[in-house]
Length: 253
Length: 306
Image (tube, rainbow over all chains, first blue to last red; front, side, top):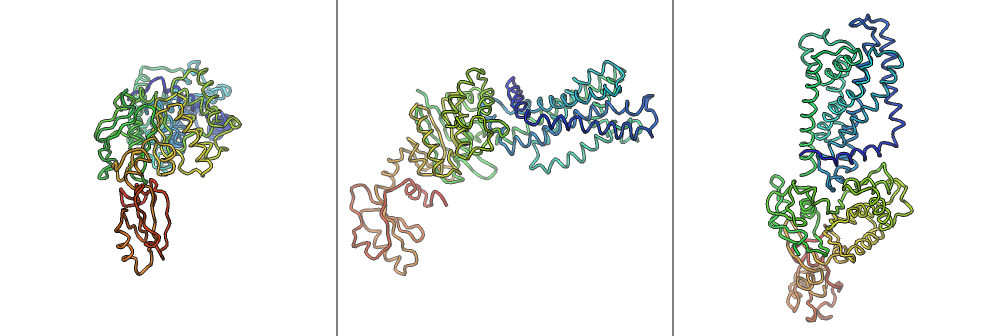
């Protein structure tokens, strides 16, 4: 099934429910990346040589931005959507209306990407204030943040559809999320990895998000980036298709 | 006028388990129909099929004149009001916001939604709680809000799955009172319950289910009169050495008798001869009006609630 415009009413429901939690969200959205930038970018960065001709903090900043979008969107469609689907029966309530499973899944995914974009905007402002962005193209990190959010939200929703309990997410966070955080080019260029690990990194979505973020921050556009965009588009569409199917099978039995 | 719900040989199978077995029934416009049966009878599964939450394994199902298939879900649900068994209110929103947010799923314009929400907050008797969050409401208030929420789209069919399960008697009566006021307005209602009192109080017609099948159908009073009679004498024979002798003696008469465990039930038809005082002399017994519980026991050989 395909989503309709009714997905926007689900998106608005998520937005209104979130308003109460917005202050703590901004604290967390700003806090974590600041600590990474200060602790690792500047702290550890003093012992690190320039990478690709730029200081370590400049190298790190776009990676942190891509990670921020992934982080925010992932939590929203795993812990957040699971709570709505299982604990609060919100999905069942919405499915009693003309909204379909596709609308509900699309609404939650859109909302997660929106939240990811808000978090990216906060971090982007901060990184700009630190003078870590070389190009005005960096403003495109906002739509990129939305796209990265969509991709990870859809992937998170696949996990949620199969999760029997909250504990299930530990596997995803440990073996996928943390691996991506550390080995997809946020902290060091993946060309330094052994060949087999580079293949693994290429299969992981965050690698492509980081490549795009870094190119936009530096203003170094190349045709090869279209490949990254295509990679993300295909994975996002596939994950959404699978998530809708799995949630439908879980709820309409 | 065509029936609001029409089910023919509706069947739901979960692996080897047959949850609903070829049920046939119809709900006519303006009536309140109850599916009565114990837990596991197939009531909720039937309701889930009727509301599009469970694709039938086989059989046909028409709701509001359209086949209940995914292609028609949105169209049918736009005219359905559904109160599910589990509480599903939005905990982070106020009573009023719960209604306004829900109205958007139906595409109800904001001004109409505000007007309806206002009316329904009053209907649910939650005027003083409109700005409170769901957490601070009692179980009965939550259930009334769920009912109000299901009325936002002014449904042509209202479906209530166990509308008062888990509520205390006082809260239950308040919900019944709200459902009765909807009946007076001519709302078509399909509900499930395992409370015979609820079934007798609210429903014009009952469909009694057991083990996934329909075992009887009719108006509550007609079901009692037809299957049981007017009165029941319960004779307690538990632990008596002469229990069998008494049971055999009392089985002969103008009444029908049934022995379940240590209790002998004597079902007396209206106007027929009753067991005499002499016949019951020295036995522990009570005499009472026949109920739906007796209908269920008579039809299935086991109690509605175990």
